[in-house]
Amino acid sequence: MLVLAVPSVNPRMGTARFSLIRTLADGQVHSAERIGRALGLSGIEVDELATRADALGVRVLKAGSGYRLDEPLDLYDAKLLAERVKGECPVLRLEVLDECHSTNTVLAERAKAGAAHGTVLVCEYQSAGRGRRGKSWISEIGGSVALSVLWRFPHGAAKLAGLSLAVAVGVATALEKLGARGVAVKWPNDLFCGDGKLGGILIETTGDTSGPIAGIIGIGINTRLRPAARERIGRPAADFFANGPVMPSRTAVVAGVLSSVVFALELFSREGFAPFRQAWLDRHAWQGKRVVLSQTDHRVAEGKVVGIAEDGALELASDRGTRRFHDGELSLSLESMVE
Image: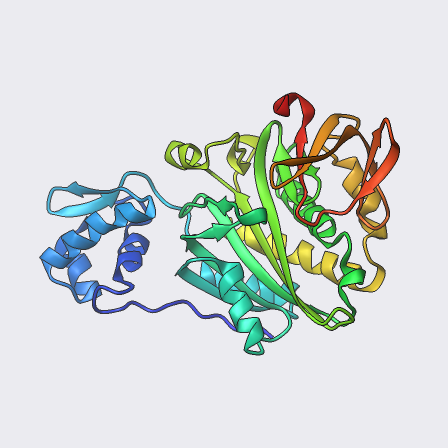
């Protein structure tokens, strides 16, 4: 079953800011009078909205008696996305939001309140996205994807080893089908193209140790980052635009990713990580490289990456022999970047 909820236009200033952005997304000039009439706002209020749009990382320019964006935005086609998901992933219940602080946080709250298995939140603008170990995830309107999936597992936490790696295979497969080139995975939850991070996965779980477990699978993907967003990220970042011959719409990216991830989640629920192991190794970015494992800035181990085990554990060859590590709160870095 699929439920689609797209926020309607607020006649006052609450959600009108995003309604203005949606109106201007085509990059064309729209008269202030027409905008005000559509949103039920005065000319002064429309001008205030245009100024406030900067807080979302969007530049609204004055153009005579009207307004336009500095460049068009690729916003979601909610109706088309609903049709795609309904046809390809009937188990999902989809909701498209204009704004939220974090899709994972919002969906976790809904999961506690009894949200259905397969609930999905997709957001145009995520103001406080989160990564692992408390890090922030920077996204921008029209230039990245942020979504979360609620998946309920009947078994306990011990059966979820390697889940983030299986999801990474699902996301990478979808991006490759859409035309992305050189997609690689980094243990335990990142996607890379070249030296830049293309996407990340954040999985948070609640439930009894013996099960059932509610998993919130958060997925972030860079589709077309502007210079300002890259500056905010502050580290090498890759995007789909620079790594594919044709840039698909964000709607197509979300539909493709959801279809592939649902397949991965269903297979993982039945068979665990083992069926994904070879596909993950085929895309392994740091296979054979020397790395450092750390936890809260404390070095835990160092050595050469041998591979991963069938439960998703990292296999590291060191002077103490081959050792296995499960993700937990561990961070993995190239040794050359740490020294």
